[in-house]
Amino acid sequence: MSTTKRVGVGLTVAVMVVCEVIAFGQVSQGSERSDVPQMLQSTMEQKFPGMKLRRVAKTEIPSWYLVETESDSPEGLWYVHESGRYVLAGGMFDIQLGRNVTQEYLRERERRVLDSLDLSQTILLQPESPKITKPLLVVDDLDCPVCQKLHPEIKKLVSSGIPVAVLLHPLTTIHPDAYRKSVAVWCSSDRAASLDKALTAQPIENPAQLCQHPVDDILKFGRRLKLHKTPTVFLPSGQRLEGFVSAEQLLSMLQLDASKP
Image (cartoon, rainbow, N blue to C red; front, side, top):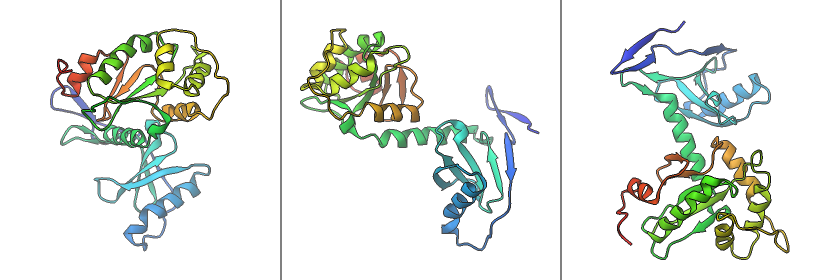
């Protein structure tokens, strides 16, 4: 049973949040502490056949470990006691500070996924004199009207010294030709120019010869980030913005003067 307590103004958190607690056979506690993550991974995969873990790491709570499964949903985060006997599945809160600890872990995981992106799989729009090192990430569906509206703003950013990496992420359920166009743009001799054509609704012909392309890898990357909308922009900090955002707003978020050339 869970009880709740109001912390601060308008913040209701659970004093004890237990969506599900699973107890299973306790493993030996004679292992060295450095062996606990490996021990917990073996125990979890044995008790839950087919489960694959991405990571086991200490939490701020003594004796409890964070377990990340291959599922990138919130349900993919579990908390496991170092004994290997108890598993807590659900949200965890710090009621003293009014923190949603699980949400913090989810944001940390998203930053790690973003940092894993291979920029060679993007169309990198590089200004002559970059003002920042890490590029903005823009996730585009080439047939998305809002992506087409956003593209001139992205070009303004590049002119203002902001590098931008464009990820071709076709939403084929609503734009069935977007996948073909994405491959055609990638396999063209001038990707940036072809990107401009596609995002101004000009016809995109198939290249004379297809090439190896990263579109499928980008779609997998999008699934890890739960990308369901385009355009989506990720700032270098990892902040996610969905939909249309003007160049001036983006420059302001980057704490750069939009009036400077």
